[in-house]
Length: 203
Image 1 (cartoon, rainbow, N blue to C red):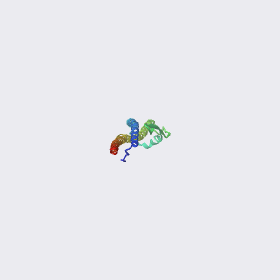
Image 2: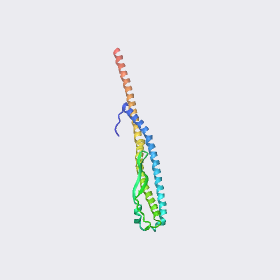
Image 3: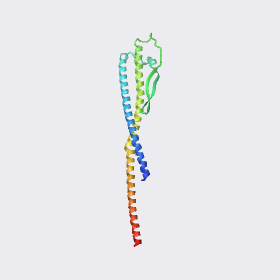
Image 4: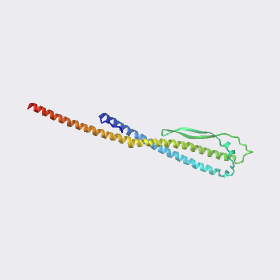
């Protein structure tokens, strides 16, 4: 910790700094609360998506034994694009899941089973749910990182910068008070000596 100057100018600077810290801290605390809320919401959305995945798997059960080869279904669930939008959450730019596009493959209804279309639809939904989870996980990681940084800043202000400024102000005020007391004492001594000189000269 750097040694502080025990001057009126430094006292003013420390008081101004303390005022800035007190003004800025509520903004940081509000951002921290917003981020905590958003992280909880994203985690809830992720859990909901995972529950939906379990439901889709349940829908697939009737065809599990029939899906002897996933290769023949691969052309029908080949992802063309995952559409996302950029969303601003508590000052953080994060991707938001919008949609998923699949490559279109012609179906030979003579060569495929009657349940083929329904199975493909469920497989595509499963793929879409997993794509949504990937985007939600990116959201969670970005927001959690910003929350970590914001929490560190809140702690820095609360536990370091504000107490340090308050202590600096206390030290400077004591030093200035001592200096003023010493100045008054010197003035009294000087005044006493001048009286002695005057009385000696007149005597």
